[in-house]
Image 1 (tube, rainbow, N blue to C red):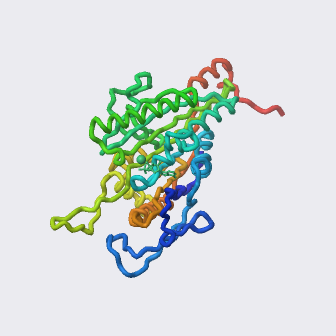
Image 2: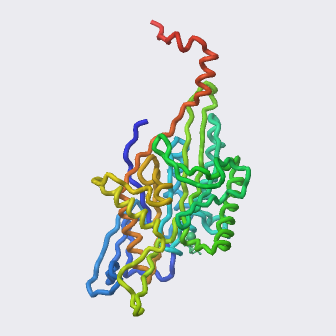
Image 3: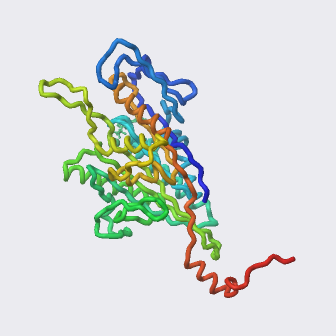
Length: 377
Ligand code: ADP
Ligand code: MG
C-alpha cells in the first residue's frame, strides 16, 4: 500500500481561567495562532528588560472549547481512519494540572465532560453497528510506563489474551511496527464493557500509586483500541487491522535544582527522563539530515515508535495554562508543540490476507490454481 508523508497535527488547548493573561497571551481570530509576549527570558528563568515576543502557528488553538468540540476537531477523523485500516495516535502533553487527563479521560462527574477516550469508544461501537457489511473484533489494552517500568493496568483480569508471564517488552514487528509483548488484550463487545475496562485500569493505576508510592503525574498511560475488520463476504481473504493509541503523557514541568547556597541554579532538570528522550527523538525526526533516531533510548519512545516516525495518523494536544505565573512552562510546551509539527509520519492501510481462507478457497475451487481465468473474447 503506497503511503504519503503526513505531518503530525498539533493543537493547543488552554485550561480555562478567570485570570487569563491577556497582556501576555493573545489568541488570534484564525484560531490557529498564539502570540506570546514576555519580559522573561524563559531559557535562563530570569527577568530581563527586553520584551520578547513569539508567534506559534498550529493546526488549532482550543480556547474555551467544549469537550465535544475538542473531540470533533482533534479525534473524530483519527477514529474514523481506524475503520479504513489506519493506525492512529492522540497524545496529550503539558505540565501537571494543565488539562491532559481532562482532555483524554475527562471529568468523571458529568457525562458532558467526558473526554476523548470514552467518546472514541462510543464512536467505535457506533461505527461497528453501522457497518453491517463487516464483522469487527475490538480489543483493549492499557499500559502504564513509570520510570522505565511497564505495567499492564488490566493484568488483574485473567480473561485477557496474555502472551507470557507478565514481563512486558517492546518488540519490533516484521512490517516495521511495534507492539508490547506480554500486554493483555481484552475482547470488548460494546461501549459498556469497554468503559468498565477503562475504569478497572484507572483503579489499578491509583492502587499502584499508593502501594508503590508513585507519583501519577510522572507516569505515562497508553490505552489502545485494537480493531480488526473482515468483510462478511466469505470468500474475501483480506482483512484490515488498526490500533488507536490514546496517550496521557507524564507532566512535562522542569524542576529547578536548588544549589548549595539556596540559589536557584540556571540549569533546569527534567523530572521525567523519558520526556527528554521524547524531545530528542522529535528533534532527530524533525531534522531530515539525521539518520539515526534514538527510539530505543526509553520505553516510551520505543512504544510510540510507530506514532512518531511510522505508519500512523498522529495528533498532539499540548495543554497549557492561561495564567502569567506559568508562562515559562507554557513557552516550553509551545516550543515542544512547534517541533512536533515538523515530524512526519507515513500512514498506510494495514491490510492482511488470511491464509486459511485462501487455502479453503482453493479446496472449494480446485481448478483455480491451475486454470487461469481468461476473459471471454
Ligand atoms: P493534568 O492531567 O494535565 O495534570 P488535569 O486534567 O487533571 O491536569 O486538570 C487539572 C484540573 O483542571 C482538573 O480538576 C480538571 O478537571 C481541570 N481542567 C483542566 N482542563 C479543563 C478544561 N478544559 N475545562 C474545565 N476544567 C478543566
Ligand atoms: Mg493527569
